[in-house]
Each structure stands twice: as structure tokens, then as C-alpha cells.
Image (cartoon, rainbow, N blue to C red; front, side, top):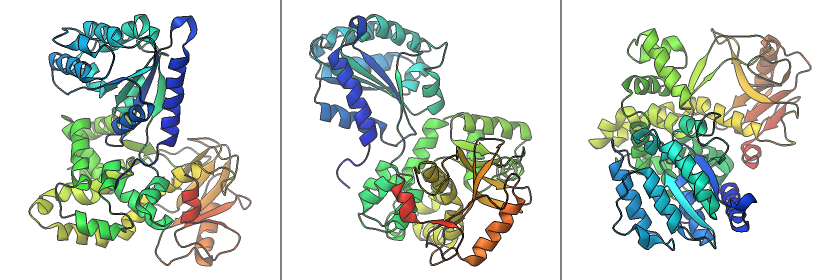
Amino acid sequence: MDGFVGRDRELELLGRMLTRTAEGGRAGRPGRAVLMRGRRRVGKSRLAEEFIERSGVPSLFFTASAQPTVDLDLELFAAAGAASDLPGAALFDGQAPQTWDAALRLLATALPEDRPSVVVLDEMPYLIATDPGFEGTLQKLFDRELSRRPVLLLCIGSDLAMMEALNDYGRPFHQRATEMVVPALSPADVATMLDLPAAEAFDAYLVSGGLPLVLDEWPRGSSVWDYLGEIVGDPTSALLVSGERSLAAEFPSEANARRVLGAIGSGERTFTLIARAAGDMPAASLARGLQLLTSKRSVDAATPLSTQPSKETRYTVVDPYLRFWLAFLGPYLPEIERGRGDLTLARIRKSWTSWRGRAIEPVIRETLRRTVGGPVPDDTAVIGGFWTRSNDPEIDLVGADRQPIAKRITFVGSIKWLENRPFDEHDLARLVVHRSQLPGADDSTPLLAVARCGGTASSVTVVTPDDLLAAW
């Protein structure tokens, strides 16, 4: 696909920041900084490039490498400066700064003083890993030099935990930058890009995760099966390679973490079953792997939402694309590479309905959190699920005033995401029984049904795919 779709909110925020640099700041400090974070391959760098192109201001775009020493990054930074359209770009010619202090001073000299400019430091976690003193150096040069010029400094990174921590109290860059999270493209963006009806757009979102690179190769108007039938046999497609590249960058040496992630991606959700699927991994090793995965925001650890405490933790892969890749593609790359993508496609078809029914749940919960004045009661602060060790009952949707232990349950709901299967009176009767088993709920607790094909039952609010898409 061609064109730039979505990101209106992010572009507007960046535009406001750039305007402030042009208008100047207090005490002669117009410079601004943004810490931009988001998962790998969601389009952070592309967003920065689009913003620079639209703004038309002088800029420098530098992408750090993952080399073990700082020398190569300094060399690449000087080359990026010389190739930029900054007024002082010629100052970088023939320069070989030996430290980041020298490199950033050179940058400050090259920036214009009479008009705004943009400087992008992409893959900033690599710079910090290579040079632990980089944070302090950047803070010093931003305070003394860069903030005195009308420059917008964009620091971009995919390590969510590290980028979030950069603004913490006690860190050198504390309160010097605006934090900005770049999510994957939304289901509504997917519907717009692919020209699909709501239900099929959500299917496409579960497969692509809203990753622009995957959507770029998805023919407009094509269903999931049209796309998969064409692409699964191509080992060079973005759908196939993005998962492996993301894992290699995120967990280059943590083999245990990747084994645990693979076990969760295969469908296991409890500690015991994950350990078994990961090759009977020792409990201590599994606990360390889960801690790493949750700290990196790769895995979500959830407990049942009700008015009573519970330790029945379930683990799920956060990224929708990675959920699909780990379940259906990653383990079977060898057969795809030897030309047997047909086996992979048959496996996806066989498991699609059951897998989709579970994979759509976190997407629907996130969508319902976004509704304003819609089916969700206004006093709902959190949305989760409820289950017991025996899964009797297992409730798809629970709204409450707080978590992890609620004071009040605001609604109870069910998800029916089947083809040609509306939410009917039988489903309603089952939901009523489940409500009676939920601690904190009673006969007055509102009922909600989210159904791919609508509903025929009375006394329940039914939410359709069109309603969900409108929330985005």
C-alpha cells in the first residue's frame, strides 16, 4: 500500500512541540525534547520521517547501531551530520569526535539559531548500552547548549521499560522531556488501509498486529485468507520475518526468555503449563524469564478481577502480531523455507476459530476501555476477566471500579466471536449463571455481550464489530 495512514494524534503533538520551539521559551530556552517509545516495527522512525517532511525544517536523523563500542556510532553520527540539511552541516566534514560530549557540542554549533530544527536520535537504548555515561552527557549538553536553540530533540527507542525509565526521578534526563508512546496502527486504521468491513478488519488486526510493514504488503480489500494464502509461502515477507527480527533485537542472548515466550505464544497461560511447554523448565528459571518478559512489556500477567483476592495468574503475549507469529509461524519457519507453506496454512485454518476466540479478548477489552458514552457504565475504571483454577466459571468481561481487588463490579460480559452465531437466549442464560458466581456481582449488575454477528437475546446490551470499530 502507498501513503501514510493514521498517526494524526502523534503528528499533532509533535507539531505543537515544534511550534513552541519556534515561539521561544522562558529564560531563552526554546529547545524541547521528546522521549518516543513503542514496540519494534510499529513505525516510530517512519513517523519521525513523515513529521520532518511535513514540517519542512532543517533536520538531522541519526540511527544508532548495536555495536559493542562507541567509536562506530560516533563515526556514523558525524556522517549523518555532514549529510543533513542543517545550516552548519559542513562543520561535520572531516570531523572525528572521540566522545559524545564533543559530538553533541558539534551538533549544537551546527543548529540554526533563527528558526526551528529537528534532531532525531533513533535506537537510543543502543547508545546507553554502549556508553552508560551517555544519559548524563546528553543531559549536560541539553541543559547547556541544545535547550538554548530552537531545536526539537526526538529520542526514539523500542525498549519500553528503558525508555520509560529515562524520565524517572534520579535519572539524568528527569523532567527534561515529554514522553510519547507510539502504538501500532489501530483496528480503525487497519479498516481504512485495507478497505475492510469491521469484523474482517479485526481479523486482519489479529494477524498483522497493526504493524505498518505487514499492512503495506496486504492487498487492499483482501480477507485474511486471501492474504495468508498468498504470503505464508514467502519466507521473505514482512509477516514472516518481523517476528524473528523483533525477538533477536529484544532478546539477543536471553534464551530462557525466548523459550518462555514461545511457550506462552503456543497457548499456555499458567505457570505450571508454561514450565511444561518450555521443556520442564525449573521454577526459578521460569520465574526469572517471566519477570524479564513482564518488565519488557512483552508479556502481561493478569489475575481474576473481582472483589476477592486471587493468585490464579495468567500470562499472555501483549503484542497481537507476536501472538499470531508465535502460535502459527515462528515454530514452522523451516517447513515454510523448504516450500511447504501449504502445511502451515492448513494448520492455521484448522486452529483459527479457537485461536481467534481467545486472541480477540484482550483487543476487545482495550477497545471497551476507549468507549465514551457507550455501552460500558461511566463508573468503570478497569476491564478484565474472571476465572478459577478449574475455569468454572470463566468470564470474558468484568468491569470494576479498581484493580486488582475491586470494591464494586460495574458490569459482567461475554464475548461470542463466531461466524454466523449471534448471541442468543442460551448464551444469556449462561452469562446470568456466571454473574451469580462472580464475587461482588448480583442480579442488578448490568450485562454486556460482544458478538461478531450481533445478538437476539433480550435484557442484555449487545456490542457489534461496528460499535467496537467506532471506539477507535
